Amino acid sequence: MSGKTLTENYDVVVVGAGHAGCEASLACARLGLSTIMFTVSVDSIALMPCNPNIGGSSKGHLVKELDALGGEMGKNIDKTFIQSKMLNCSKGPAVHSLRAQADKQAYSNEMRKTLENTENLTVKQGEITELLVENNEIVGVKTYSGATYLCKAVVLCTGTYLKARCIYGDISNYTGPNGLQAANYLTDSLKSLGIEMRRFKTGTPARIAGNSIDYSKMEEQFGDKKVVPFSFSTNPEDVQIEQKSCWLTYTNEKTHEIIRANLDRSPLYSGMIEGTGPRYCPSIEDKVVRFADKNRHQVFIEPEGLYTNEMYIGGMSSSLPEDVQYAMYRSVPGLENARIVKNAYAIEYDCINPRELYPTLEFKKIKGLFSAGQFNGSSGYEEAAAQGLIAGINAAMEIKGQEQLILDRSEAYIGVLIDDLVTKENNEPYRMMTSRAEYRLLLRQDNADLRLRKKGYQVGLIDEDTYQSILRKEELIEQEIARLEQATVGTSKEVQELLEKHGSTLLKSGTTLAELIRRPELTYEIIKPIDKNRPELPWDVQEQVDINIKYDGYIKRQMKQVEQFKKLEAKKIPENIDYSKVGSLRIEARQKLEAYRPVSIGQASRISGVSPADISVLLVYLGG
Image (cartoon, rainbow, N blue to C red):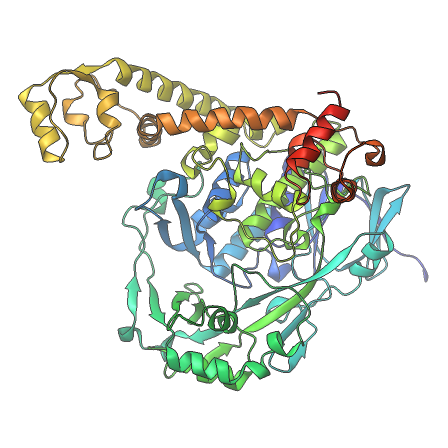
C-alpha cells in the first residue's frame, strides 16, 4: 500500500473557515454544489481572534446586506449576541448602524453547527499547501499530507494565517491568531503562479480577568431597550433578551508617558515588524504618537462571552513588551490591579494585491480561482464575510454557467467595498466606512432587504416565500406613501394641538399628511392621532414610509446621480484592449489601466492616476 495518496473530487474547495470561508462554503453548498471547506483547526471555525462584536459604523450595513442576499452572519449573531446597540441614532438614517457584542464561543459553535448540518458541505481539518493549475485554470489543491482534491473552483479565505507571525516586544512566534497553527506553504505556491504577494499587519489588545477590574471607576454602557435584529428573517421578539453591560474608561497622561518611554522597545518602531498596519484601527502606541495633543483616549471594556471571565480591552491594541503592557494597562482607571489573561500582540501575514482580481473576486490570471477576506487586503469580520458570500456565489455561478453577481457602488456597501479593493491603491488593510459610500442615503441598512433580496432570489439563495414577502412589502410602502400624499387635514383644534405639542408651526390652511411628515420635528408615528384612515402596517413598512417621505428630495437627487454613474458603468471595455494603441493617453494612465485591466469606463475612472481627460480619450477611442 506504500506510495498511495488520497484523491477526491468536489465542485468547490474553500480554503479557510473564518468569516469569509464560512459564507463562501455555505453559499456554494446551498446552491447545490459539492463543497469542502479546509481549516487548520475545526475548533477555530468563525473564530473572533480580535474584537468580540459584529457590526458597527458601516459594518452593520455590510451584515444587513449579506443577510438580504442569503448569507449567515446576521442570523448567527442574532442567536449568540449578549448586547445590542444602534449607533449614530442622533444622526440621520443613512448612518444608523447596528452593533452587537457576541458571545465568542457561542458564535463559533453555532456557525459550526450550521456548517456541519448543511447538505453538500464537508468540513475538513487540514492545511492546503499547493494549488493545481492547468492552462491557467484551477483543477484542484494539495494538502500537507499529500492528498489531492480535484475541483472546478477554489475560494481562498486564508485570513491572517499565511506565514503568520505574532509579535510583542522582542518575542516573535510563528503562529496564527490565538496561538493557532500558521499556514506556511501556500504563499510559495501562489508566488510560483505569478501572484503578487504583500505583507500586512493587524493587532489585538490584551484580555484581562474580569474579576481583577474595578468597574466602579468606569462608566457603564447598556444595550438598547428595544433590540433590532440583524437578520430580516429573525423574529424581533426573539432578540429581546437580558443583556450584559460594557464599560468605558480612559487612558491618561501617565499611560502615555509609559508608552512614550518604551517606544524604542515596540516592534512597530524598532523595525521588527515589516507589515503595514491599518490606519483606521491603530495600536495605542500609534495613537499616542500620532495624536500627541490628546491627553486621553477611550477604552472600552467588553465581555468575551457568558462562558468566560475574560474582558476585551477595546482601543488599546499593542505590540509592546509584556512588562510595559502590565504598566500601561494598570495606569488606566479601574485596571489598577488588572491580571492579563492573554497578552496583546501584533500579527503579520501574507496577502495579495487585490488588483489581481475582477469585481467578481476571481483572479484575472487563473480561471476558477476566487479569494475573499483579509487575504484580499481588507480588515474586519464583516468585510471578510461580505466578500466570502460574493466569492462563493460567483464560484457557483461560474460552474453552473450562469451570470455572475457584481454589485456596483450605487447598489450596496458590498459594492463599494469590492470596487475600492479592486480599483484603488490599497497600501494598508482596508476598512469599510460610511464616508466611502457616495450614495449612502440610498444605501441605508434599514432598506437592505428592499435593495438586495431580489438579487439573492435570482442567484438562488432566497426562497420563493421570502421573495413574495419582499414584493408585498414594496407594494405596501408605495400604497401608503401615495395615500399620505393625497390625504389632507385642516386647521381643526385636534390638528393644531398636536402641532403645538411637538413645537411645530400651526397651520393657516389645509395640507397633506405627507407635508406634515416632512417637517423635521414630526414623524409618521407622531401624526397618527390625526390620521383617521391609517391602515395597520408592519413596523418595518412604517419605517420605510417615514424615511422615504421625509428625505424624498434628497433621495431623488441622489437617484439622478446614480443614473449618471450607471451610464459609465454600462460602457464596457473589451478584455483584449491594447492600451498602447490608445493615442493621447498619458503614460501613467496607460500603465495603471494595463495593471488594473478595468472592466468598464466607470471602473477605469476610479483608478488612481487615471484623470478625467484620460477617460475622455478612452471614450473617444471606444466610439462614445
